[in-house]
Amino acid sequence: MTVTLHLPPEAEAGLLARARAEGMALEDYLLAIVTKAPGSAAADSPFSRESAVQRMLEFGDRHRLSLGAPVSRAALHERHRF
Image (cartoon, rainbow, N blue to C red; front, side):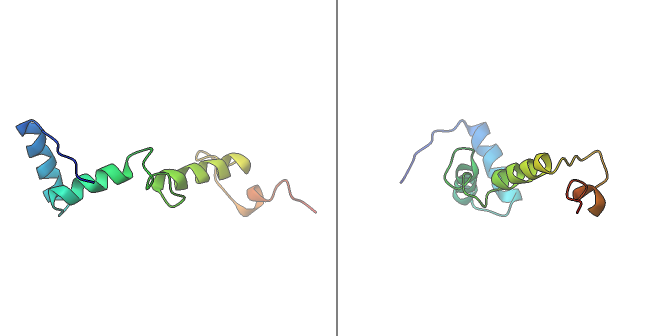
């Protein structure tokens, strides 16, 4: 699919500067932004960063872990004593 955007010169200059800072062509940079946007097929894949973070948060909730408390083997298995 081809899309034409009419950007103000300052917006174009900013995007071009960011693309160059990433070592990318402007077209590739914009494609990366669009494919990583929330709601896009790439962002919703099980391998996306957002999906990974969500799974980690759910794991922490399920095992009662928090970033404020030290995690040890004993703490992880506290409720699973034989």
